[in-house]
Image (tube, one colour):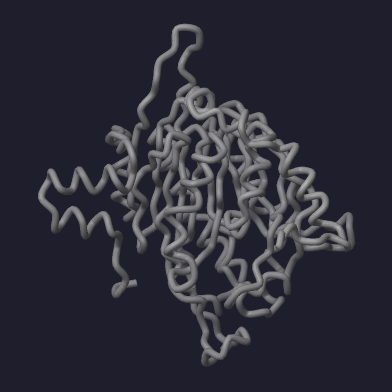
Length: 382
């Protein structure tokens, strides 16, 4: 990762005078969240492990009739540790050890709700179209190895954790799913959500491994707010974001695995736009690093055979419904970003913009129902 740019924030801070930097940050981030003191212990643990650690505090509007609902949202990004040719369980154990330390760092920074990246338990092998050894890491969403580990972490640190796994559903013929498991702060499992939209673009040949989810758009009432999960490719689908909002989400995580050549121009826009359009906070999470596989693969796009996806560019961030967002984590380093938010802000923004009153669900519901029919004719007038 030595040749990769760390972040555009670093470039701007290096080359712009303070006043110009402040103006640029306002254009990029809206009302720039202020720095949040995460404490000496958190920073020492991050430094010991060479993790990046950032903290921000979004502005709040105090009300007379409601107490503040302050919550610290953490997003965690990480690279794999061992080569993809190492024994598969050793690869998992090395990643688990790193994620344990990242979660501990988030805990020391006071995090209440933590989101992990897509399929954090393994390399993102879904470019290769090879089932093994990767299917060996598919696990039960209630009894799996990583699920038990995250339950322990959630209970130990009194935090809600959204953990993303490759799920094996033994009750339905060993069906494989791309799944987020939502774990309450006492270590109990609140439920799961399966990925709604499966990519078929570039090297992302994920339908070789699993198909579209079947559980709608569930929102989970946690100890620290109502949480939804829009998994990876679902961020390209505005209606996917919409339904989590309609179902009452206050925080939506977007655990992802995406590379610079494909999606980086979209990354800073989509989660932020979703937060604005749906009046909730979004935690956008992307893994980091370049993962090299033993066998070459192609994707029918005319490019030469290759052994890696490209660079996973990290840049995880938190976006607010009022159009402000945090700067992102590095494009090259493991890291934890913690944002303190007031969940009352969701309703305050709805009251200001009235999107829920002007969105015309009746109109679009009728139009979409007709558009889904085989005999639909587009409404093009002469």
